[in-house]
Image (cartoon, rainbow over the protein chains, first blue to last red):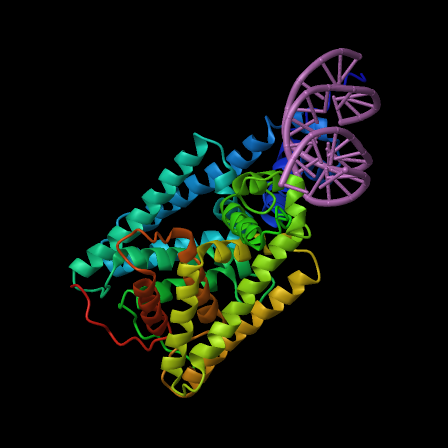
Amino acid sequence: MSHRAPPRDRATESLVREAALTLFAQRGYHGTALRDIAGEVGIRTPSLYNHIESKQELLRGIVLSSTEQVWADFEAAVEGVADAGERLRRAVVTYALRAASHRREALIVNRDVASLEEPARSEVMALRRRHERAVREIIIEGVGAGVFTVRDPFLASFGILEMCVSIARWFDPAGPLSAGQIAAEHGEFALRLVGAGPEPSAGA
Amino acid sequence: MSHRAPPRDRATESLVREAALTLFAQRGYHGTALRDIAGEVGIRTPSLYNHIESKQELLRGIVLSSTEQVWADFEAAVEGVADAGERLRRAVVTYALRAASHRREALIVNRDVASLEEPARSEVMALRRRHERAVREIIIEGVGAGVFTVRDPFLASFGILEMCVSIARWFDPAGPLSAGQIAAEHGEFALRLVGAGPEPSAGA
DNA sequence: CCTACCGATCGGTAGG
DNA sequence: CCTACCGATCGGTAGG
């Protein structure tokens, strides 16, 4: 009757990872103690080890899954789209949207990737480079097709991508602009930046 | 004769601050131990205290002076320039140039400002907001004058500034582009982004 | 899930 | 500039 299973909360693991996400984003990996994470969940530090392998594994899980999702998003966004302008717009809107709607992940990936131990760090950096290269090739393609005007595709791709990821630093979900609106606007910024701006109707 | 002054190296203080700059930029404030900084200089940890007040003061010195310099640079750059396009271009080129030529400072300011204790942190944030607001006002001014086409000056100013500061993350002084070239190109990016792009001669 | 505890390391001080 | 040392805290383990 009172044969209750030991507290095998699967839910607790989620709480732990959620707390880590919030605290790593706020204070950084090295600025966060496991004690703080445990406190947020309402347990003691040693109990964390029923749910995680180590502090490093906690970081690895966040950074790897987030980076993989960025690449998956990108592939889905540009699939079957031929026009370079539209490909760039979709790639940028998707990336910007992720930065705005997964701010903590974006902050941690960009700030604490240096704290990731090998081989995970190299994995992550390879994935990020792949994404950056893919965006750059869209730009090169558009220049080749005569629809973009860009002096240096490398500079343009970095400028665009860094502008997007930075959304995570200042975006306030309670502010006047939604994540979707901001992402759409960044899509326009990107097109303007590569010289394919549609000169949108603006408030002049 | 052998009355040698004690090793009152004024030069050592510079070495210490230089080492802190490099290590904080590489590993973050919380990821850097004073022991590492001392090791870089070739002394023991306690000897650091002949040159600095505390680890926190080391961070404060870096972040405050760098932030103040950004504002001073901005004021000097736009002084006496009336045209909004030219004001924006100069403001952006100056800011981008600083990010490229003072990479460590830019990285630390953007990554470790959260580790700064009060009241320094509020001081720094106020200075940064002042700079951001000043850039935004140039954009608003250009829109008012009918030379810029921007839907949301807030978004545009953040996009431009974050793109510039991110230069510090990928710029390689040994690479093909100089800091000056990259800064100039970011000035063009900014003008394009606000719809005032001169459609420069590019490689198409 | 806990208490008790580990060795290591942290920033910093005493005292020369 | 050093050695010797401080209390606090770190991530993590033992053992239940």
